[in-house]
Length: 169
Image (tube, rainbow, N blue to C red):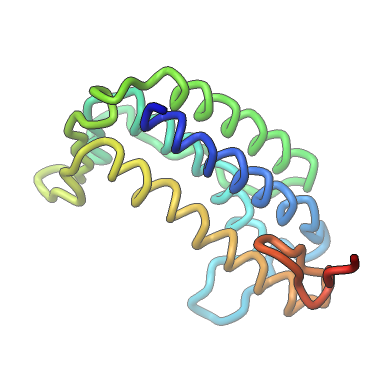
């Protein structure tokens, strides 16, 4: 089994779970924040929906300099749940295809992420993919689950039962 095939196993499970969380977004609370320093719910949801764009960038480019002309992040303005889901579905599909096309050599190649002269990461592509994209997305998906709980919206059981989705034989 190739490294990409192993990574795709996790990718498919975690993207399905991320979608389940995004499906529960309240459309009437895009400005809800857990704390003054927290990201608003709508922006956080769009960050989760667009993070696969970063995963694809890691998998398909030799490096990324955020200070370089033309570098930008996708729009993170929350409009509706359906738009958020469509954005997520499209970006996840493109990233999945990029990952499936990677050889072991591609994933072992170095990938540098910087902001001008400030190097943020300079690691093998597989590590950059897991650390900068995959774990990053899981972290923010977990934050969204907290936002759901604080708004009394049922939290899906992502790794087994949740208080809202108990195991029933």
